[in-house]
Amino acid sequence: MRILIAEDEKSLNQIITARLKEEHYSVDACFDGEEALDYIAGAQYDVVILDIMMPKKDGLSVLKMLRRQNKNTPVLLLTAKDSIEDRVKGLDAGANDYLVKPFAFEELLARIRVLLRKPEAAADSCYREGDLEVHTDTHQVLRDGREIQLSGKEFSLLRYMIQNKGIVLSREKLEQHLWNYDYAGGSNVIDVYIRYLRKKIDEGYEKKLIHTVRGAGYILKEKE
Image (cartoon, rainbow, N blue to C red):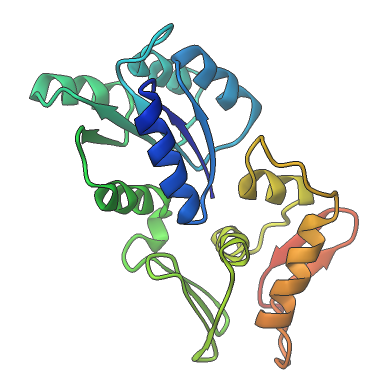
């Protein structure tokens, strides 16, 4: 999952970025509103975290521009102000959630998990396809009741694929959701991780769940 954090307080920005990376999110970071819009124009994010008080363009202006462009990316606003009026302004502008500084990082993580859930999975944060279960809150993966241990990147890839089960995902799209702009890996890195996943998820099972669509990418689904 790919997250953008726009926060002009550099030390806080760096702390949030580092902690999110420890949780195996792909993170891009910037320090003003104009830079945030440039990042958003160039990539697809699963969550955008915006500080309200930023130079060049404030967070509310960035949010309003995002919504005018019909982008429905979940947005979490950060602010030092804790008034009903400020919260209403943010929510009316199209924010999905609101967090007042200072905050506990565990609360930020919990709010991000909520924003990442699709409506159909919100009830239990568990995605299923066939006998495969992926629990996004606990990072537990089960196949036919057997627990499977995955690395951080393997889990991120599997989570994105099962959240988009039945949809063909190109290598470029998968790579964009797993790595940030600083990544300079090889062109076959997605193929390598797909191979790792197949070994852990499909090997030994009659029904395969991860399929190659020649010339298009990969798809996760239980075939009839």
